[in-house]
Structure formats: structure tokens, C-alpha cells
Image 1 (cartoon, helix red, strand yellow):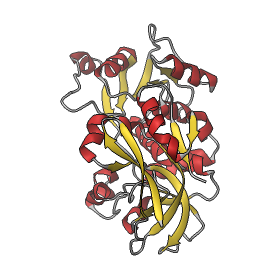
Image 2 (cartoon, one colour):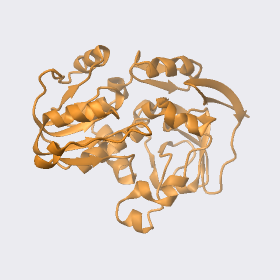
Image 3 (cartoon, one colour):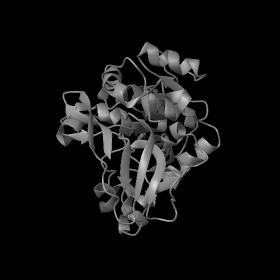
Length: 317
């Protein structure tokens, strides 16, 4: 059986190729993909070009076709995290799941942006059944889990602002209570307002207690510093490019500003994301602009990278 998949080949280009379906690992799963989102992190050339060739996709949900674990029987819908911790090491016991050696070593094979992929038993520590969810909503669990971690690390969620109203920024906006959002892209501003979200005037930003910074840039951090109250918190949600170090002015010290970083997510964050979606607080229709077929992904990749579209998600019948 052949397996069509989307592979990043460098210089911002993606190709659709056919490869054999991988063998099911002992104790693992074979999953038929139903929905897979294109992650904004997969648009960063500096990050992707060092992984060539690389099969895209980790925002994924699908139907188990072959199971060697009774918790996830054939026919069930699952979300498997592409990285999963051991839950036993010192780092895991301290809740630092994304720093667990197993977390760093695990992945989906060949990747989620394929007609079929396999899940190793090690990944099942952060795999959940979601038969009650639509596949496009279940595919939000990985990115939303990252947002739930950012909210947890921030502590206070009152009087919050979100900088950047791309897909990840929108997830923050829906997960928070009455935040204000900012973006320089008119299309993103229009989308957010069309979904009933509150967008502020970047020329006159509101003073807030917590700012979530979704773009990885010095300019975005500086903007956050201009609007956070003394004693407030800035959460950096994305890294700066290699060779760029964040400059933190002395004003942050004298104003007692806390700066937190939020990298990826662990099983606890997955569960928080699952609860939010099951509560009806968020659906894919609110944050995904284009539901497409696998063959349309190479073009959509270029469009999302250029900022022409908000977010594509591949649906595979």
C-alpha cells in the first residue's frame, strides 16, 4: 500500500510524494489521517531547512486502523502528540515534560501530513481518544495545548492582550476572557473582528496585566513592554531567529516585569485543551480559513508563508 504525504524540500517548497506505509511498531498504532493543520512553525525556513527532507504535520487527528494497545482500539478517533514524555524521569515528575529526553526523541512516522502514519508506544503517554469531536476540531489539540501552557505559566489571565492575530494568536484570544488583540495585517484584523473578538488600536494600546507575544521579534516584545502595567507579565510564545537575542531594557527591571517563555506542551496541557474544545469554547471554523485537500497544500504553504491566508487545514476523506 502506498502512502501519499507532504514533504518539505527546502527554500519554502513542498512536494506531494508517495512512499510505502510504515510498519506498525510493537505496541503502537497505525492511524488513517482525517485532518492535519499546517503549523506556523513549519513556515520558518531557518528551522525547517536544517531538517531536510522533512514530512510536515503534527496538528493531526485520525482513525486507528491497526492497534496494539487496548486503550485505542481500531475504529477509534485519536489525537497523538508528536512528542511525548516518559512520565517517570525527574523532569517529568517536576512537570517539565518538554525537557524529558523521551519527549525530545519521539515523533510521528512519517509525519501527520500523510494519508497514514504510525504512533510508537512511547507517544501514547500523550495520545487521547476523541471520538466525540469532529476531526478538524481534534486536530486543534496540539496547538491549543501550547496555548494552554502559555496561559498556565502566565498565572493571571485578567486584563490580557495578545500581540499577533494569526492562528496561534486567535487561539489565545478564544481561550482568554475578553482579551484585546493587536496585529498589523488588515486581513487578520478583519478576521478577528468578524469572529467577535476585540481588536485594539496599536497607536494607543491599552494598559494590561499580561501580554502574550506570538511573533518572535524584538519589535513585538518592545510593543508588549509599552503596554504592560508595573508588576505585569510578558509571555514570549515564539523564538527569535538564530543569531537574534532578545534585548530586555532596564525599564523591565525597574517596573518589576516578569518575562516568561512558553515552549510546546505536555500531557496536562493536552487535557486542558481537550476540556476547552469539549466545552464548546473553540472550533476549527473560528481559526482555520481554508480547508483543503492534500494536493492543494504546496500552494497553500506559499500563501500562508506570504501572509495571504490565515491557516490551511488538510482534510483527507
